[in-house]
Length: 276
Ligand code: AMP
Ligand code: MN
Ligand code: MN
Ligand code: MN
Image (cartoon, rainbow, N blue to C red):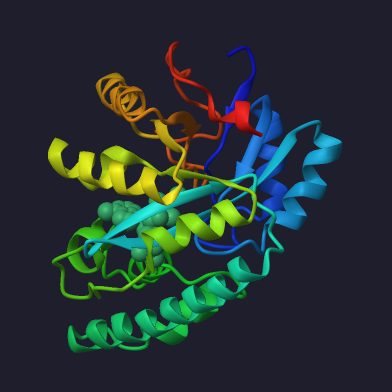
């Protein structure tokens, strides 16, 4: 791989802090040749990013990161090279948006019970016309001095098992993969090491994912160390999946995650961009 590529990042259309145009400008500064914007459950940032990419000399790949459920667990599936105007996908995103707004109300109620009032209104202000996420709640908790950092906000309130966690039914995995495939895109399992699955459960997941039409797995993901890249590579080879690379960049100032700062895809793994 002689060019820099990043196929997973976020803008203000979901829980990133840079507007799409600034994100693309930053990608150019970091020498990226190919970039995909993959906001949570929304395509709202794609037009702006695409028009910024052209003059910056970056090949732009329209993308998304869908929230899905499989066996009562949430999995993120990145869709790469999608047609953002495919009607069933757009209808599906409306449903996900409603799910996210309803969940936000319940998170706010749980925070209120813990003595933290006014979360929903404050978070809605932060979100603007973007997609509402737990990251916005974390930002609110930090600015209200209820937590010292976003990580602390997740650890104390928002993560699974914590007082403001709300279990949610996302799009069933098969349906989400279908939306992506029918929109002409490639379904990629995002950050596979994040789910802490046993090898047996990962096997069951990947067999289902493949049977639904999933084609790729993020072999190189933002915070992964070399061991994790090796484990993900093994999954790619064992299940005959293409390999993707994505930083999962959300905002500047995080010393561990930067646009395009990624290990190269190990040789022997088929690059997902062969499919673009
Ligand atoms: P949501 O999709 O609304 O549940 O929010 C998930 C987002 O929250 C992820 O994409 C991350 O950006 C962020 N997130 C999830 N878990 C954590 C965590 N433990 N620490 C910091 N950020 C997290
Ligand atoms: Mn996020
Ligand atoms: Mn994710
Ligand atoms: Mn992401």
